[in-house]
Image 1 (cartoon, rainbow, N blue to C red):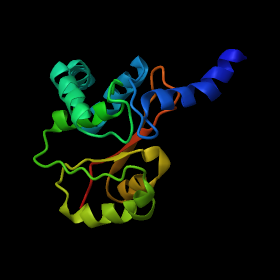
Image 2 (image 1 turned 45 degrees about the vertical axis):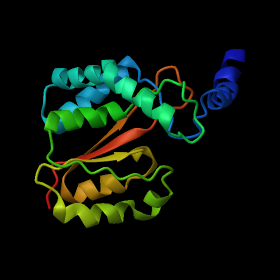
Image 3 (image 1 turned 180 degrees about the horizontal axis):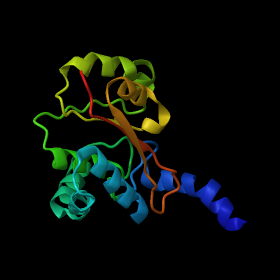
Amino acid sequence: MRQHFFREVFWPYWSIFRTGEFHNFTYDLTDASLRYLAETISVVTAKPAIEIEGYIREAINDEDVAARLRSMMKRGKRSGASQSVAMPFGRRLGWDAIARATRPKVIVETGVERGHGSVLLEAREYRIIAGKLAADAIILGDNAHATDKLARFARERGQFLFFKEVPKNHWYSGAGIGIAYGLKA
């Protein structure tokens, strides 16, 4: 009973105050979640899962990227988050693996931070860019567990998969990546 109380009630508050991360949490993924991520991306990119796993492992073990991130944290502000907190990439490893597997000429990232805008605009944003997409375009929707707009967009123009991440040793239950692919203009 005490363990349940600690994990469900106390640990989130303790983690938030220790790390300063009040939203957009960072964490490692479980080994199983990393495998599922690789398999999902393998389907979307038509690349072998072993190749995708290699990209994911390289990103996890890349000391240059980790050092650059630490340096950025020391120079910048992170909405009050502790600069000494490790910041693993979680589901964002999938973004990198897709880019490395497909090597697109153009990558466009838009951000909404807390998601208030996407509640109002997300579907409209997809319709606006629909005619500008390359034949092999892939659209990723971060936090796709909170809205089905990308899934609806993909239903009209292609295929959709959803990856639900599972954090390792973290109180947050995780988010997900919506992936629209095989899109027709």
